[in-house]
Length: 323
Image 1 (cartoon, helix red, strand yellow):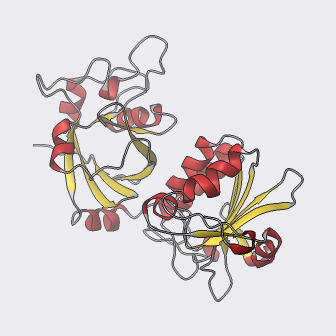
Image 2 (image 1 turned 45 degrees about the horizontal axis):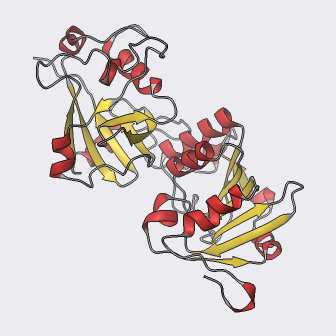
Image 3 (image 1 turned 90 degrees about the vertical axis):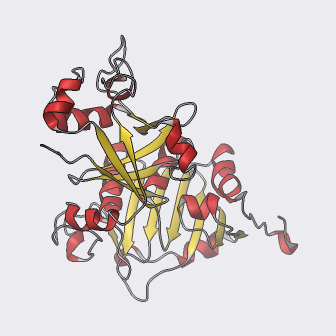
């Protein structure tokens, strides 16, 4: 929506396309964001959907309202794996609650900028009724904090400055599975079978054995979702290709999506062998080997329970059950 004076005001449901997608497609690749809150799953989406983008992200509320340890861990993974992300936390006071997006030209000159109400999340850029307004990019650049007030998420002394939610102990990056599991038990849940309904056998070339075919990475896997699950609660899982975080009962975390026609699968996004390696490790099956019914029987479980903690975060229980 154009405004008097040449300003432009993207509104829901066009914020994602007008603030992020269109500037990238016009040739820009250097993206600076300052926001109170962000979702690591959404940042994961941006880095993989736009393979030239370089993101410099500043989170302004971490000191006063800590982020989860799994978001922090995912930021570190993305920084290290992509080489196209920098994430810094503001350590000053008062906290920064502003939301601004700045695209720079190739030579580093501020080119276009927006400020408004959208946090860097799926809710902020797609689901909620937000607005952003185009502003002078030089003025927005001046609103960014000085470097000495920021800490990189990968700094070795990061836990001396910030605590994270659901951190098992201070100064370590492990998830407190007892705390998160206790909370999850009060959330809506579904049970997803890891075997075929007709004969209770593990799928030969789908499900946990999706990669057991020629020219595929043999660990590739997905968790099947039956059509009955969607009929009972169509909104339990996100739409196709929307990234979300799965926390496991043993303290792992993955960025996943719902996939395939009919929304019949959950897999780890961009590398579905991650999920396959995870289940093989839990079951004591060699990497790349076929998963059989015997392995599940020996483990003591042939299903997972998925708890919906919020639209962005799910908890998966695959704990052993014997007897």
